[in-house]
Structure formats: C-alpha cells, structure tokens
Length: 328
Image (cartoon, rainbow, N blue to C red; front, side, top):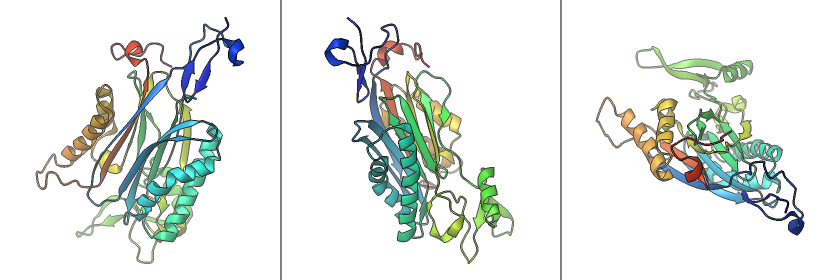
C-alpha cells in the first residue's frame, strides 16, 4: 500500500492512502518528528514589576501554538501586568483563526500596537515584551520583542544556540540611537553625586522627566513620541532534534553572561524543566552577591526565567549520548 502523512496537532501518523485521500509521499522521505512540550518558570521578586506566562493555544484553523512570554516593567507594574493579562487574547483575535507564518507575524505587530495604546491610556508605566510562539506541527518558531528581555533557542543536539530577540537598549543598539536622535532626542549618561557620568546611556525627553535606558517598549507615556512599539519579529525552523527556548528578564542577563546561561540550559536538558529555570535564577542571584553577603537572599532586581522545552517523542532513541542523529 502507498503511505501518507497526516499531521494532527503536530503528531504524524501513517496509513493507507485510499482510506483517507491524504497527500502521497515517497516512503523513503523522513517523516516529521512528533514533539512533547514542557514549560517551566522561576522568579525572584524585588519590585514586583516582572510578569510572565505560558499557554497552549488552538486556533480555529486547528493550528496548535505553544506560547511563552516575559514582560519586564518599569515605572510601576501596570504596563507589564496589562501585557500579561491581554497579550494572548489579543494574539488570538489578531490571528483571525489563521496560524500561518505571515498571520502570526502580523498578529504580533498588531498586538504590540494595541497593548501600547492601552498601556498609555492606563498609566505612565512601561514594559519590555518578549514572546516565543512554537508551532510544532509546522516545526516552526516565531519570536517577537520590544526592549531587552533576551530569548534564545538552544537545539537539543548541542549545536549553536540562536538569539531570537533584538537588544533595544540605547547603550547597545546603534539603530535605536539613530532613531531617537533623528526625532530630536537628547542622549546622555546620568551623573552621580560626584558629577561624573555613569550607568547606561539614557534618553532625556525633557520636561523634568528622568532618563530612560530604552524607548522601544510598551507604554511609557512620559517619553512621548520617542517610543516605538513596533516589535522585532522573526520566524525560523525548529530543529528536527527539538530545542529548549529560554526567555529571561534583565535580572538574569545583567547578572550573567549569555554563554554561562546557555551552558546551564545545555547541561540540564535531561533535568526537569522547572529545575533548569530555577537553576538559572539562582545562579543570577548568587552572581549578584558574589562580592558581598549583605541581604544574600534579596535580589538586586526582579529576576525571571521561562523555559519552553520542545522534545522529540523518540528522543531516547535519537539522542542516545547527547548527540542527535540526522539533525538539521
């Protein structure tokens, strides 16, 4: 009998073509793997301005999406909490039942615009937003972000990790500096009690408003028209071997180099996903107190880590010793 493939919520079945009328494929072609999805999170709270979430969504088109996100608020928790409460319903609405790549990218951009408008109407607070959308049936991931909450895709075969988010800090983003300066913004470092400049480069919008380290965010009405809520959006193929997706607030990235965080992810791929997220947050806390023990359990910032694990159902067979067979 001829073979067919049918993908139902990312699971591949085989059977007889005449019984179902499905697409004919060459039996020698490798079938798309099926995946198991796990999520884990860890957080240490200082100001209560970080918010996060993970959920499985099923669109009217039967596309199954696994979504995880982090929002790092500033100037209060209002904008971050608004994003956490409304991001997923707005994404579903803006996707309009279509789970295609183009539709998800459009939905991401429209969702950020709507959240930005609502946040500005509600308060002066602002927030970063980084979101990962995994479509296991299409073996694809779409990521979008505003701000500096970085996200990485770490393949489960040990190959190179991929950064999924742009860094929108004025201190590190030449494109953002050029954009703000073109709008007439004044950039400078804050001055300490000694009068010497220090800290990251900041935007000073005038009118007695304090400096802001980034202007590519949700909300932040105090910064006026200098804010751009257009997210960086990218879509790429999920490796056949699966991957761990990590999203963290800057409480992690300001404390630890990315290489150290990614090494933790790789070293704990066979550990429970929540344990891996907790190890990252604990490492960040320990590093912040590496040179003093004052208030050891008190973080220097809200610190949040989310881990979305996309694991092949047959991983025990294809990853016998930490190496993926036939990964692409």
